[in-house]
Amino acid sequence: MPEKQGKVFVLSAPAGTGKTTLVKRLTEEFSNVVQSISYTSRKRRPNEVDGVDYHFVSKEEFERKLSQGEFLEHAQVYEDYYGTNKEWVEKRLREGKHVFLVIDTQGAKQIKKLIPAVFIFVFPPSLEELRHRLEHRQTERLEVIKERLSWSAKEIEAGKNYQYHIVNDELEKAYTDLRKIVMTEDHSEENIYGV
Ligand code: ADP
Ligand code: 5GP
Image (cartoon, rainbow, N blue to C red; front, top):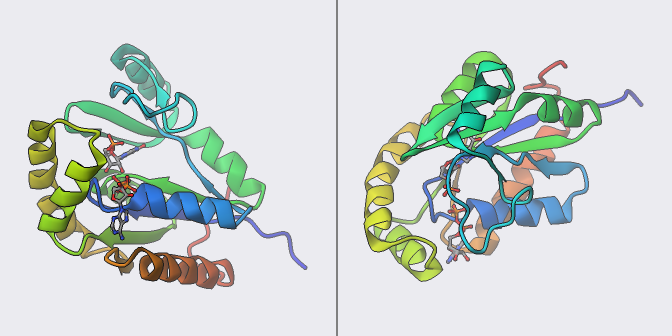
């Protein structure tokens, strides 16, 4: 059997849609699927762990890494910077892992211009349900939630151009759809980024 290199999967969804929940479950089920841990200048939330949820760095540190070409893509989301570590992703691909980039639509556009990848957008059932999930999660203040919801409408528009669409209404159904996409791509010779 030929040695198989992994693929890059770009997954985007408005905040609160359930992308963290879905991708976590995928990495728990499949040992050949990993999630890239982004660098961010955003403040750590109380429930988050440095090196697990994100690599939390200062704005200055982020800018230094950016100028040294360490990011495959990066974006400013709300007030903060977020970026994907190029070297880490390429190393995992060479090891045969499928690497999930859980990034916004600005980052996805950069990846699309740069390398072959699989693009998945997860839609919330509605903006109303999204508001409900964000309020229920209780990780952001109400004014931040408001800001995120207005940005979500733009993200949803951009999501229409993605290759695969999933609606996260029923979690089990959404997860089954995601799983199917990964298994299909695992057997296809398309969308391979040669590293
Ligand atoms: P994201 O990473 O997209 O911001 P999360 O995975 O943190 O979203 O999910 C946001 C909230 O919605 C969490 O509290 C999560 O448990 C909940 N959630 C995820 N999927 C569903 C679903 N299908 N139905 C109801 N609640 C969900
Ligand atoms: P949050 O602050 O809620 O964790 O993430 C805010 C947004 O930033 C989400 O849409 C998330 O997908 C996106 N994001 C997280 N990491 C990256 C990254 O490395 N690059 C880009 N472009 N977006 C990211």
